[in-house]
Amino acid sequence: MSGVGGAAYSCGGSAVRRAELTALGLRSGDLRDRFWLVIKEDGHMVTGRQEPRLVLISVSCDNGYLTLNAPEMKELRVPVELSRKNQVHNCRIFGFDVQGRDCGDEAAEWITTFLTTEPYRLVHFEPSMMPRNSKDTMPCFRPTDKESKGSILFLFIQKILYASSSA
Image 1 (cartoon, rainbow, N blue to C red):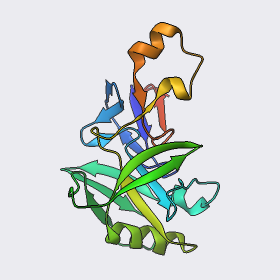
Image 2 (image 1 turned 120 degrees about the vertical axis):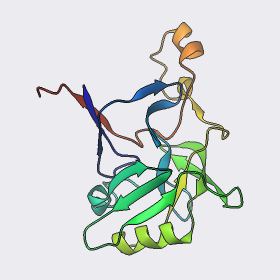
Image 3 (image 1 turned 90 degrees about the horizontal axis):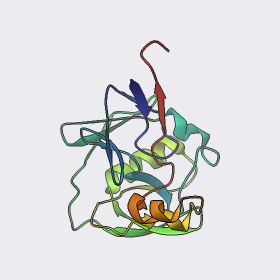
Image 4 (image 1 turned 60 degrees about the vertical axis):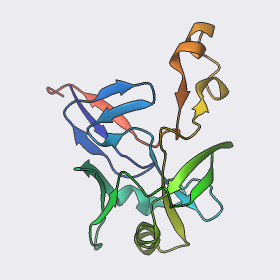
């Protein structure tokens, strides 16, 4: 089984050969499901519908760095472990509040330069931050699922498609 995922909502995917299913989503090495988000200055998430060029950004994660590439842009490497001095933003995702640590001015300038419409920030969820509880967005779980399935982070931040190697 192989997977394809994008670390930030609406960004292009990354092929992975295998992934671990954790309580907070899929993980393949340093690449974590639902841990990265592009936001506007007011903290609201940015989607590919709002910024179609967002889907042209390819994402990978190796050796402790998230790497972003886009047409006619220099590669950007952002450390997965961010300084605790970086600001924590209150973010809004489909009407729900979550937190994300700012990835710095270089990442913000890179995304803003590529999208060209307004200032944006890249934020990273950390396991110590309060995730949204799945019961707040998915009431279709059975009562036992609500207790055992735990929490979800940035909804749809990382698109994951699975296909067998024969597909």
